[in-house]
Image (cartoon, rainbow, N blue to C red; front, side, top):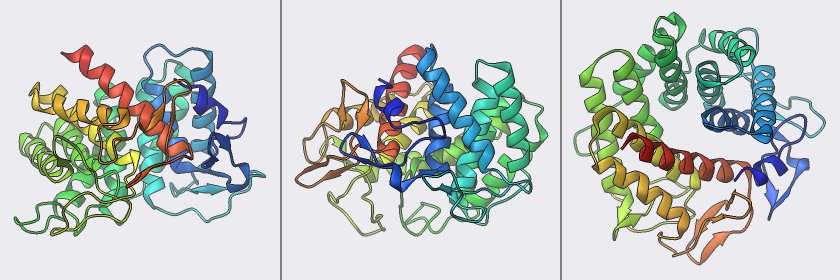
Length: 331
């Protein structure tokens, strides 16, 4: 399953884009993808040499992206030069996520130690928006499950919960943002992680409420019909395109966490729908991955699929497969 991901990765990092299955080095690398890759490779239960190599590569890239003050670069060109200034965008939150998972779950003690040091640097900062804080909360929550006394993670996850929950709008649109965007279920999962870490049932209930709302919006005719790349507002209905695999993977991840916390079988339905979306049970009746290589296709279109197989979509597929396996183990 990791063949295509390995083909997109060189000694420096993970190429963001592909032309069909071929990497496009001219578009360079990004922290977003390296952090996602770090999460996926650290979650793999029986990593072989390929996964171990990828995990070390992604960890090194993420750590290199972190500035001394906790801000993060996102984009590196094909020659290994950063092409942006360090800031606190979504990629900062994903860096915290990846480092938190690596500090908790890497099988190599040295990698765990390096990731923990990096996490503590990133966790000095607070992003101004709820979305990067939600991503960061997922890493903090994972770290607190392994290290309950980790102050940097506890402080970060408390602030993330406060940022997300105070952003709520009205009861007619319970989502804490004016529009659904991308990887939406990560917002709900962040509240689940925060409620678990802080032993606050009210926060967990709020996360379950948001996840249930999202599934009601994104299920149509018995299958996932997820928010398209342009987002979705309160009064927008029906199938829309392009649909992104990252949205499906976020649903699987959040439902997996919800099931672990509640053992309510309705969350298994969300996980299974996410996997079936990749198998072709979607608005275009089109399979969204190559089972031979483990490559994910970049988007679902009204008339089929985007044939390019980039990093984000491939990692979304791999992450969803991991959540399906984890759900079976928890049953």
